Length: 116
Length: 107
Image (cartoon, rainbow over all chains, first blue to last red; front, side, top):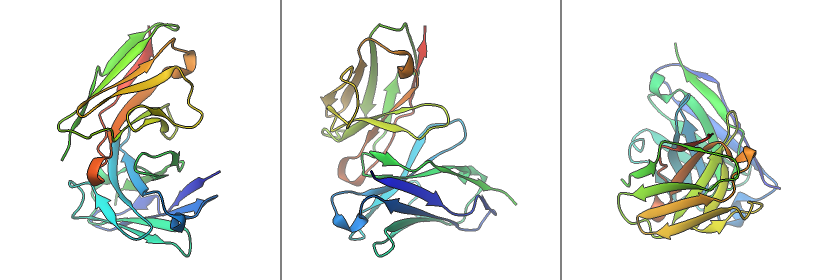
């Protein structure tokens, strides 16, 4: 059974960079066949796609976030990561990592609050 | 950027009845369309991918149809556990846009 777990700071100051890591267990990122996604949900709102990465490193980003987002993969650790720069209060959300462009396995989500 | 529009925003249906949810894309996404169910405090659950293929473990009362720009999720004979928020998502050509969601509530 594939499991994903997000980790990282729950509080980030405005203008700083939000950094999250997703650790995958029960399956190997480098086995291929899937994109690995980041998705967020603002409090009480809908889902927002951030982007996804293939094990080879190919990335696709939401155009509205593209200038601030970097998604990377570390196959040796079976992890992939999200960096979102120059954050503001509008980036406060629950951040999910997931397997697939059509995401069949999800992490539990982690709340990241942007506040000084 | 492809915009996904779901309708209605809220749908009130009685248990045992059928629910029909719609999703429209601003341009063709072929069959690269997924449906998710989300309950409060939980991560979304994949129901349908490829517009019409049920994900593993999803009951047969959930069905998806459509291609191009018009898609439908049908839930036949609603069960109590089906009342939730439903999202569509396109993943065509490196995209991933979600619709704004349809809240399915008990009538």
